Image 1: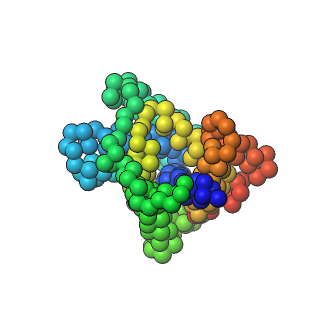
Image 2: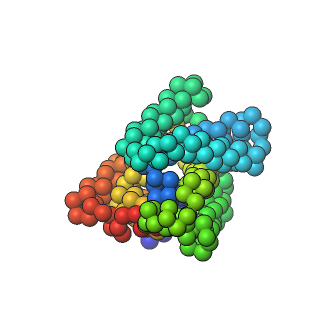
Image 3: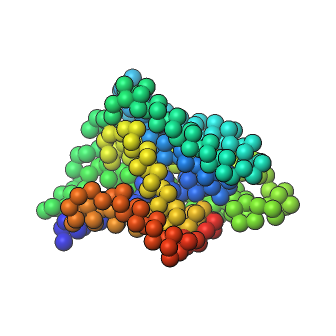
Length: 291
């Protein structure tokens, strides 16, 4: 039971990080109109930037700010690149462009940054110190910070989407884009704001991943992309709230299988989720494009 309780905590923390990732991805999809395959690569690139800033300055708050700022900056640059394709309705071309961007980021991390080697974060940054321990169950400072940060980010995001005029604009664009234009909803401004928020969530995810894993590599981006895609298809593409449930389900399944079944089956679980949804629920467990 103690092992189960410990792994359940790990699943909740991992699910929170997955939730931030898939929420940023879905927000770009429903408001920005882009199937952004390079979104996880932006997250990992921010981890590299955080590592560089940490090595150069030794200042953790500054490194965190630089990483989050760089994620927002990369997201806004992406919006400018994809805007002409979105206006022409070239969904397929925007996806191809996103794939090209992901390859560019991967090549930079695999060849240019740290000579292509994996990077490691110091224990002072990851917060591996034990905050509470009982038997086989222990809670680290990093887990507490990550859990509180993820919950806070999700609560603020849901408040923005369901309690502000910007959120109403997001939902109108996601559900009735033609009517949104007729009503004079600022499509471009809303898209820029959505990309900014997605960039912010990417930066926060990068920090929590750095704290949780303690390392990053060019291969990590591809792994995260599989997880984001699996969660999005499982919950329903563009479903913001459903994506949060899907993130927790995948994280729980991964942690429990890794704990009780020999071998590394985390990627296989993601593919199983995709296959199940494609066969039995093509529109996802919670439906498609429901903001």
